[in-house]
Length: 97
Picture 1 (cartoon, helix red, strand yellow):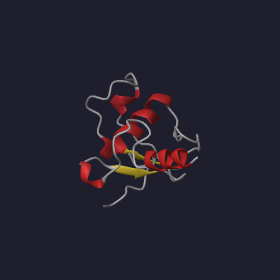
Picture 2 (spheres, one colour):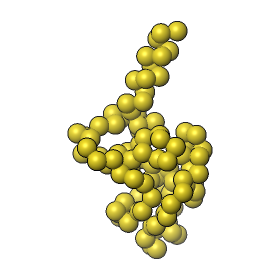
Picture 3 (spheres, helix red, strand yellow):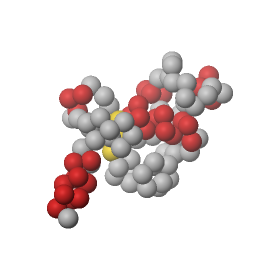
Picture 4 (tube, helix red, strand yellow):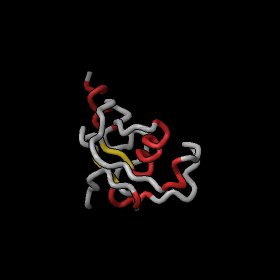
């Protein structure tokens, strides 16, 4: 039983999408959704874009907020992220170091 608890707590230190470490030292922007789940911004951004909804991929809670994407992105395939600027999103409170 202790092994399960240890595995669960260590997985909280990793992004549930890419499994890389959630660290402010990684050079990647971290976000905490309103449901308290944490992700890398580039990971969660691609998830929201592919589903067309603002939902947490873990608990499916709907994220309140404004989802702003450049117009040229609206008609592109969800898997195509080239040229996408995440600074144009206004959705998450960004964690500061």
